[in-house]
Image (cartoon, rainbow, N blue to C red; front, side, top):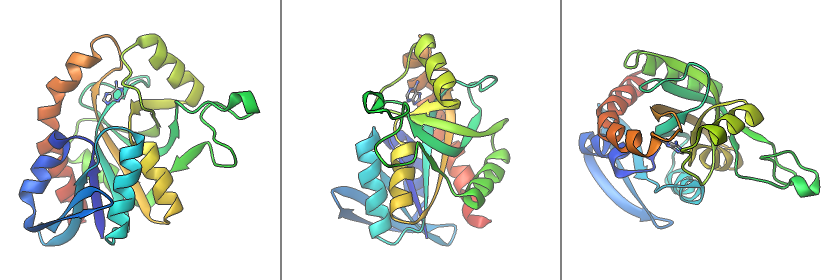
Length: 225
Ligand code: ADE
């Protein structure tokens, strides 16, 4: 069963309104709605912003039976040619704000854990296909997550160079890390709402209202697949 997560209300509202026979339960402090999208049963929740919220919400969906978790929403584009309105489907994710380098680990690396968390290749291929039907350009590549809204070209450049990431957001890597530990499939799809520069804080809210319907269209294509 699919479990769909978005950090913000704007990112999940259209999907929630489209679910037939919705039932909402609270699990691990997360309100999860189950219902049918075009006849396919799925779970949906708003995680809240940031890695801790994303981790908890992923666990809540898995506890309720999700076996394929999709995190969707917005991201800042930091890769060459990654532009406003493009979609990025993650191949893998890193946590750019982890720093245990004083103990000999690489930037982004925890003790005895992988540096990056992969997404499921088949689910990601399906997501990219579904996105291509509704977005101009779909990129596949690494996403960097951290508990920071990036609005500085120099920081964006550093994250791109240090991690080889093409987009930044605040939840995906935590979702992928929990999915790996709980042995469920994960896919991360992000709309580029800004390019993580000085204009990011105004570009981002302007884009918010725009994405919900597009996201819903992609998820409809995905579940029909
Ligand atoms: N989500 C959308 N844009 C972002 C940015 N610039 N930094 C972090 N998360 C984001």
